[in-house]
Image (tube, rainbow, N blue to C red; front, side, top):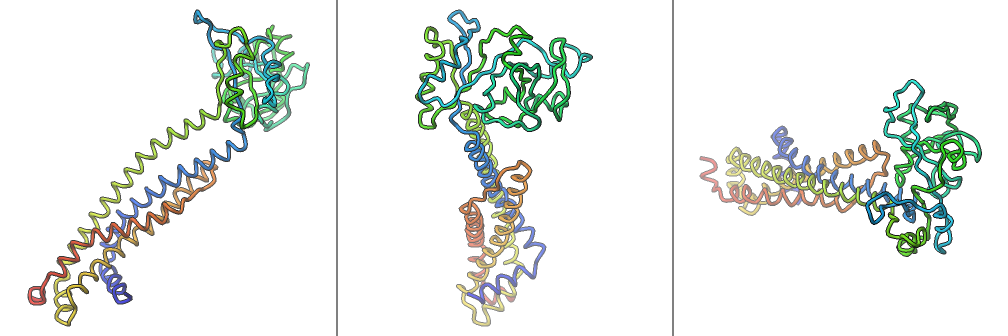
Length: 381
């Protein structure tokens, strides 16, 4: 076995450039496969961490449409009614305002930056598990605002104390929220206190979205009860959703693209295998005298066959190892750039090297058999 390995490495060392180029195809294929498996695994790990941090027990209820297709409304008692459900641990709401926010009074009214102004109840932070990234939360009775992360970025506000222009009035920013993946509508919102919204903007108190936290094992039951509880007479006009399902759907969509890239990695492996086979066939033709000399010195056909088969396996195995290392580097680098935990599935890593060895063995069968068939007299002629 040691002699076979030495002979295999000797054949690679005598033609290093050709060996590197042949192994490169295998390396690219293995690297693509490892990266395509590792990056989704890292994304899934990040999603699991995010879900465990944010919780999958958040439900939202919003007004739908009535029988005639007009926009419905939630009753003012929506939040207290939601809290009556036994499995509900907390509930809060936001209310859509018709007001428009601008950075200052010189910005045209039409330039709203895709932001919305909403009234927010005092316990909204608790229900959403939200964090105030800078400053503080709203205080009852004061005419101040808190910005979602996206809203702050679009308005160019990085810290509290800045004023923004809302429907002809200045409001002081007292806080900026951190990211809320389960509530992207809050990220794009400028939040005003519930009572201040009634006083300044004539807000009626009808919630546009009710946020409900419930027990993990009672999410489905509460989901069925929420519509009839919030609006007993018109439960069909209440739309109930589970925000975490949107993240899971996004993950599923990403996985569909990953299957495509996995297929491309398989094609690269196939091309690499053909390259190794081609290299070994050329090697057999160029080393006819070496083969004839070995046969003349007593080497059997089996020994010659194993020599070239070993060389093919070593060539592919080297490409596989390099590919695994490159795949790990790509996965780790991309995960770091996305602030994900790097997840490297060991079956994919071991399978990458194993598949490279198998491809090398398959690619080396024909060249090995061809070399073993050569007679000493023909090879030395």
